Amino acid sequence: MDQRRRKRKNPEPEYLANVFSGVLDILMSHPPNKFPNDAFTIEYIAEIHKSSPVQNDFCNPGETLATPNLSFRRYEKLIRLIAKEVRTQIEIELRMHADIFSISIDSLPDTDESAIFIRYVNDDGIPVKRFLEITNKRADNASQIMDILNMVLEKYYLNHNGFMGLSYDINSNLPRQISDLKSSLKAINKFAEIIPCSSDSLSSVIVKATSNIYEGNTFITTIDELFNFLLTFKYQWDQIQFLLTNLSDIQNLTKNKMIRYINRNWSRIVNALFQVSENICFPEKVRIQAYVLLPKVKRLEICILTMFWEEIVERFSGLEDNLHLHVSTEIDFYKILEIYQVLINHLDDFRTDEKFMDYKTRAFQKSNILHFNNHNYMEKPQMRFPVNYLDDADKFKINTYFSIIDQMQSEFNNRKIIYEDLALKFNFLNNIPVITNSELIQKHENLLQIYDELTFHIDAECMDLKNLFMKYLSRHQEYSTSINGISTFIRLNGFKEHFSQLLKVIKMALCIPAINCPDQQSSSVLKKVKTSLGSIRNEDTYKSLLLINMEWKFFTSLDFDSAIEDYANRYIRE
Image (cartoon, rainbow, N blue to C red; front, side, top):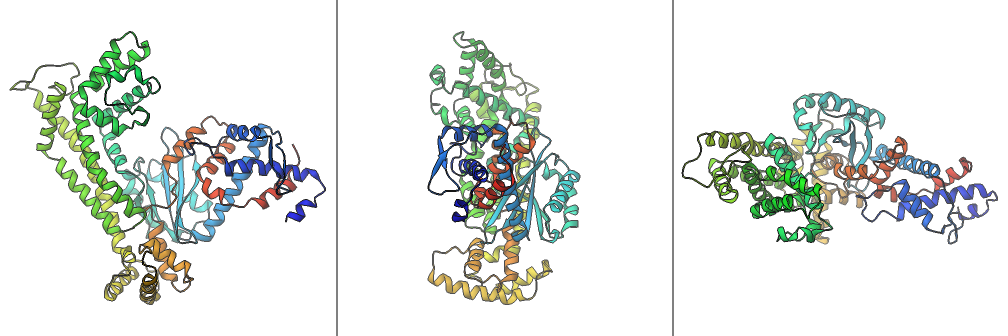
């Protein structure tokens, strides 16, 4: 190929090849410092490209040439061509490997768009989650979701019989549509299920449950406003630090850290807002913000919820790492459902009259506020409470405190049921070295009853796998015995054809988003990329950059030589 390039006499194709390769090199090798928080944009690519006086000569390897001066339109055209090649390669991979898959459809907040992801097992036996596209349709009800799903199945030529389910993240409205969706999904494939996204943190479950309740949403909004207010002092922290001692790490402040600080320094936060609102040394805009925030923060409800929030986050944090381990590396569905049962039990401990009374009593002592739903009423603690106090307290306990806990328990119960079903079907693959022959026979007979497309050959395959894997482990004792380990073992040792039925079962288990992919795209990453690309008006350019940013790791693994040559020979110099 190198000799063929050197023999070209027409400089025009060489120029175009170097134009393409120069932009490609920036995308491959020069991601923004805070990528993906800061995404590739046309402006960024042009700035990096023009800041270098020379670039590598694609047609003469080892040599350099002057960096060509390109127009904005040229950059846009090249980005669209590169994205087209990425999309083509994704479609090829889907045709080759996505015979069994699941789909994620997530409505994007504050837009009429939905993000579409697909998950499947690649040729190395590793689960992969790919970003497909953004569609200009909402996914707020069963009908809309099914319209998008059918469009995806048709557009990407996906096999209906391989569709294993639809997943959702905690911020979507999908949980409310489950009953309506199940029958529609079964019409596509009777094995299809609705599954929550394993990458959702436990904190996100707390946030979602709290924001679904009116008073809880008020709490979240107040915390957000206070968080943003404090961040305005990020680079002038010395102006306010004397009012907020023990809060020195403003650069790394998170909402959970701030809630913990409020809970432990209630009077200091209230006093700081009051002092800022009254001190003419601060700008008028800042004083007004503090004045407006003060009555929102200085409420008995906020005081109680900060105590509850810190305690529940602390209780959950000990289980978060363990849960992540079992959905990512040491995959074990029984361990996962046990963790969810522990979480449900923890919530039972919180959902008692005694626990609420404890929070209420401590909130009285801390805030010196004795009334719910009254920002201004202040009095010293008394032996007897106002007549209307018990009614307001009970309303808050039932409508807010208990309701938040009930929503969290409902989500965890749904997940527990899903993982219980997955454990019954697939968890024997995590225990191949220790499972008895009779247990193994029982497990594959259970699979034959559930999945009628499997053949009786799976009986022999299970026994052969156990014998071969045990011998392999005797020589490689550190090798993973999880489903992931089994999957890669079969492929690396050339057993794909022999274990064809078992590989189907493994694909079913790994393509379900109840466990994490090694490199997993998510709606949270997409949101950051969309924010960076918000100023782009050309829809084709916007979607092209979106795909390149979201699938950057896949993009960097591709060979673009043929695409460069095709561009050089097809397009005239502009």
